[in-house]
Length: 474
Image 1: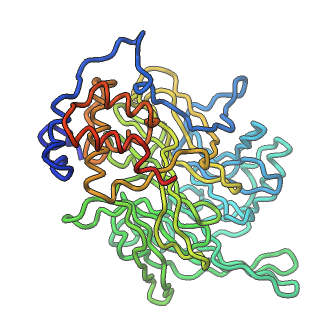
Image 2 (image 1 turned 180 degrees about the vertical axis):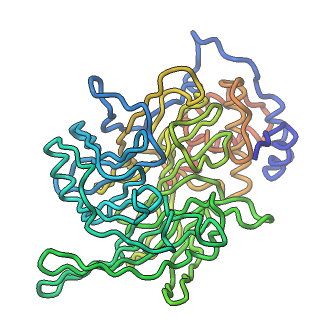
Image 3 (image 1 turned 45 degrees about the horizontal axis):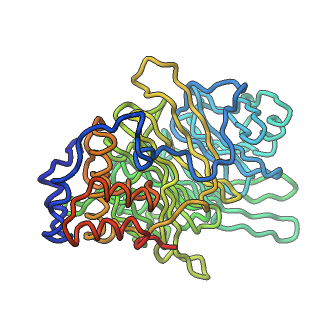
């Protein structure tokens, strides 16, 4: 995926707009603007329209390493708490208060959506077991400021089919209470290399039956996840209700790579298989996705230069840039995902090797993401932050990637911005330039087009219409 967007390739894309639009790129300005007079349309960097909180705050101990992703932790206090790993050690981090403690194992600490357990996959546990820890006990340690790394699991799953599993997500499939007996079924999805053919994405349903405070746990056999999801780069994540999978699909050589949503329609532990139906094809590539707790939204990061940037350990390497996007899903009264209504770009980074990635929803609908402040391949001390934002404050757009003509117009605007404002950036690869349109306020987008677009019609009119909110979903 190391191809660059050359002028000839862009002209081919513009053919979908019409021959009269083909001259737009030929008139793009290539000079760097005077820093003292940088126009507003060149200053796009943002952490989000409404930033609620950033940790570490000034005076907090810094974070100089983040391993892989971070996950939200539901809690009775309603604090913004996350689980993350640093220097191969797991932590609970209360973003609301700044408190931080060690918890067991080395990475991938993921809470169940109901706030009952913290799970860790076998690749990161000392005995090679899939562990469930009592979350209220860990939260009590967090409130007391006590190390919790020696807390024992309430259940450890031993099975060759889940040995060396990693990168998991968890949904609650069902929950009911009868008399004094509580029954909950958790569905855990994870990857691993021990099941052939690799990568071995699979799910296990864990039935927890609690009577008298002591759970009895019965796991199903590990089941191969959706036959449509076949590559390790797919980076699937499961919804909070365990019914849907968001995954990157690059399995067909005749079809462009795309983020998709699949519904799990049937499970068969006896044959270790599942059946899935494709529900949504976004028609653009994206990294790890996370479903909101109410199932009405999806978030993920997009990447410049490094295609997906599916795995991040210790920061981004220049010239990669990542940013956060949110999609509003179309969900019917029964909770079935039927499509999507709009999408919004939350963050914009313009410094190579610096970005925002692995976003996830908090239980109250807010969003948090990881960001690195310096490139991993630089000599500066590494620093990381967790930022909480309100995604509902972002301007939303129709998905112009689903329309060839609109995508080509958005690509023109994006390339116009890069050549005008940031010619030193690595050239855009296919489908990267259109995202710039979602970073430009309408008035600044029009100013960019007026100052640097050509005067041919209807090319300039097409660009101005895109700027003016014609594609906005609001």
